[in-house]
Length: 474
Image: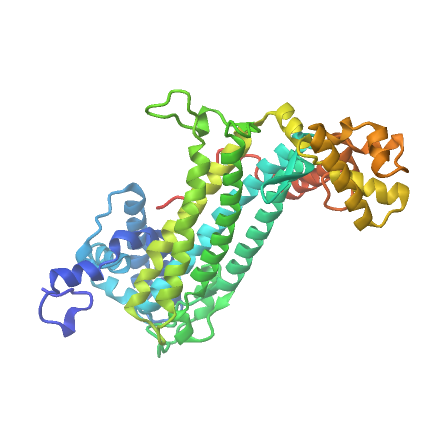
């Protein structure tokens, strides 16, 4: 027989291929708890508005609670023949509550129902991701405070540029995550309008109270246009865009961890907890957690691009294409959650090789800019002339295969006679980083201040978050 939930118009069953392409229950079962919450709010509103009796509402509400328990305990049976999570729950409610269950769908459609469920899921997931991002920020700030004076090379073009501190480097990612959290908060604020009551596309003739259902579900207001209410997927696109940018940040950091843990760099080590071995090379310790964070970024980018392509050609209001909005979003946001958990674990686990970092920071004439700045400050040279003089001194040191600080005063004065003995006070890496006291600079005092500010701002919210698990897939 045809699907009894919608099949009055149809006299035969769908072709097996049609059932296969049409069914979404294999993935939209993740929306089960959101679907029940939306139905409970809808039933309560129907009763208050006099559309159903309180007795009917009580029966449906009790049935929905029973179904929630079955889903949470794993005893609920999902049927592909019923297509999606909405039909599965409604069919089970009919078994529990009898004919009154058929009143649940009064004044709503699967179109506004799925938009509501998906919004609720995205909103819940954003809240979980924000907690995880705050935890990663805290892990980074704690490590930055502990390593505020640890000198390492700063790079441009992946070439040694100037000395910085490890703490300063870590705080750069705290700033990135702050922007990531801001983007997600913005997305959450914009999505927080309830589509429930938009019905199929035109609203309903029943005297519903959309303000009531919006409030009971934690929305700021109902959507103002029923066509937009059922066809909007901006909330998913914006969240995926924010997730993709965060994935870029995590991937960049992961790439640095991969480089830093290599023998060629040797800046940091990760314990057995976040590395794996080789099946053939017993000496290997591979930073697989970081590599997987780097790799999973591609899944997040792909989900955003896929949904953009799905939506770009759709007329108003709902089209079945929009069933493709969920799988990619589910995968991308749960992947981001897993990456955040892995990255927080690695940050807490990572141990810097302080001496090796410091030696690398002084290599390749990393204090050349400090010398140029000294020539400007002490001798009054224009910076471009100071840059040229410093370049000659670097060339002289390179010819002798020594560091700048190993040139004699006489060798320096042969290039610029006014150079005095005090020049050597700026050529060490420690002096270099200590001098970078401008706002946002790498000086250890700056780093300690900024790290503590972040820890104070993050407060106690993440104190128990060290073992935060990824957002559950439900």
